[in-house]
Image (tube, rainbow, N blue to C red):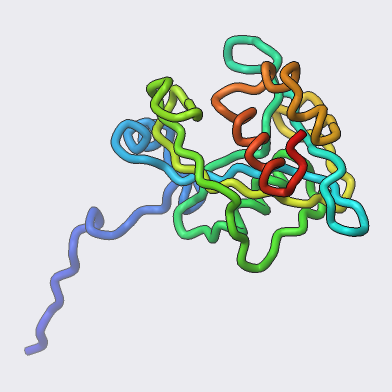
Length: 190
């Protein structure tokens, strides 16, 4: 007589998800946002001269959910099991196109960490959807960057123009503060 093996019911085996690994359904994302901080990256795209000095800052023009025109940095969530460097490259390509050619070092170091809260006034950074911790980087762009996805335009401004009060008013959620910190970090704050 031979022994038979009892196989577990089908429910014990993981099923294929209808979306890529690391992606959450809208319901799962809403639950995660309500319960824990999420990790993001912010990238300040810049052009540099031959000596490495920042000569231009790239700002995206977007329409906010309320219909207002806003200026924005490259920003996005870090996916599960994704290296920070890969997240930076993915979001730069998503917002600036596949031939932007970002110069991200093998082991990038953020110039600051921005903590976005759903409650305004706790820090300079505000995101009404969630509590997010964002690692912020200045990233030189050497290729032909073009606005992608929901961005309407990409404007290359001098650091002085980008830090002007007029442009700062067009930036929301504290990204204007982050931009000024980036320019101070590279020695270009007017």
